Amino acid sequence: MSKDQSYIFRLGIFVTFAAILLTAGVYLIGENQNLFGSTFRISSIFSNVSGLQPGNNVRFGGVNIGTVEKILIVNDSTLRVEMKIDESVKEHIKKDAIASIGSDGLVGSMVVNINYGKGNAPTIENGDILPSYSRLETSDLLNTLGKTNENIAIFSNDLLNIAENINKGKGMVSMLLYDSLLAIEFRQSITNIKTTTAYLNETGKQLKLIADQIQTGDGLLGTLLKDTSIMSRVDGVVSRLEESRFYDQLDSTMQNLQLASSKISGFSEELNQLTLDLNDGKGTLGVILKDSLLAEEFKQTLKNLNEGSVLLNEDLKALRHNFLTKKYFKRLEKEAKKKEKANN
Amino acid sequence: MNGLRTYFLETGQLSLFAFRYFKEVFKMPFETKELLRQCFLIGNKSLFLVIVTGFIMGLVLTLQTRPTMMDFGAEAYMPSMVGIAIIREIGPVITALICAGKIGSSIGAELGSMKVTEQIDAMEVSGTNPFKYLVVTRISAATLMLPVLVIFADAIALLGSFLVENVKGHVSFQLYFGVLFEHLEFSDLNPSVIKSFFFGFVIGLVGCYKGYNSKKGTSGVGLAANSAVVMASMLVFIVDFIAVLISDIFYNL
Image (cartoon, rainbow over all chains, first blue to last red):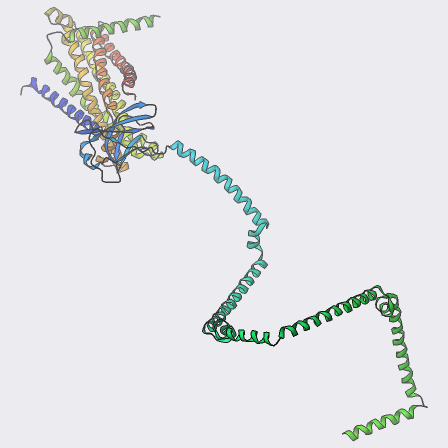
């Protein structure tokens, strides 16, 4: 190699390396945009693409499988998103897969997500239109959240009022919470209910026993219910009663009873009149019962009598110590002692 | 007033110079051998410089932006963020500025000294078209080589960025470049490659223009080299601005 050509050779190396680098760069960028390698096209219809742009990624189960190629406005409410998908994933996407538009992270660019379908639909083909699912947009989400927040605010306010009322001691709930007496009574009631139910239980058992006895035909009720012969006996008694003119006698007795009761009625009327008179204060008995002045005097008389009897008692004690009568009392005592000795 | 007049005069002369280049570039005969020699001088000889600056830019850019991204908890976005910054802007512009310094000055000085020593006039007398042999080859070489240098610079800068991420964030090679290329699009790569052609064209054009029209005397050579670097650097930014505006129309950046 001559000296003349050596720089050309080095220039060749220089340019070749640059070309390789450029090609590698172009390939790597292009690889992400599916410009090379076999691809196929599918599309999906949306009413809102939320800022999706041609060149955004298409993901299938979170894996980048292609890019958005075109977004066509079909009419006022229909947008057709055409996607270029890597041929190698074709067999995995079924016809019932659902396309939705999502965001790559919180502030990232938009992506088309293709989610697995439910059934076993056939594999997708070139030019197919996938069903789409419009996800809730962030603004819608925030609107709903705003409404919810308002409701929560109102609700919490009400709750606060209720809590305050309870604390102040208003209403049934606060009584339940704070009235210890009520709690005790409540407990007492529960105990009572317990005992009552126990009794009821016992009663039930006995009732069962009685019912059993009735069933078996024991006792009066059992006999009444179960014994058919008793009916004929009752018949017999009735017919005999009829024969013995019992009814006529019963009739006359009833008439007498009626007479007597009318007399009693008259008597009770007179008695009533008498009580009325008494109440009004007529007659001696009435005066005694009703005249309060007389009662006062009577009370006074009784008091005087009481005082008189006390004085008389003192007089009698004095009489016992009098020399004229002393002997008589001493003799009485001696006789009483003698009697006691004789008894013992 | 005088400044404004010289500015318009300069712009007009530069445009004429560019127009003349386009007229000559497609005309037979092609100076292929000289073109390749110039490519070697511009491309290969600048490679080391470009690689070093690119590597350091990638390294430093990652180190500097990393704390802020960590504040946001967005370290996962580091590869894509730094990658897009390098591919879109840092790689082309830094490379263009380095080349404006190295290539622009060398072309300006070379042609200036040739002009001063009247070699260009001698060529014209000998029947060779000096514009075609000297100017067209150099501008073409710069135009062709700058994108190549930009590609190297991008690759090395990304490698430097990866090294920082690997050391500080324990990001594997595969993950780093996987994330990077997931976020890169042709709208990032294409405009930057296309505009580096224009960067190269501007650097070669200004270098050649300043050298070709340098004043007589040895001071003219220095002045030509100096003004070539200043003007080329400024024009690189103007072209970059226009390129971003145009790519915005086509790619909706």
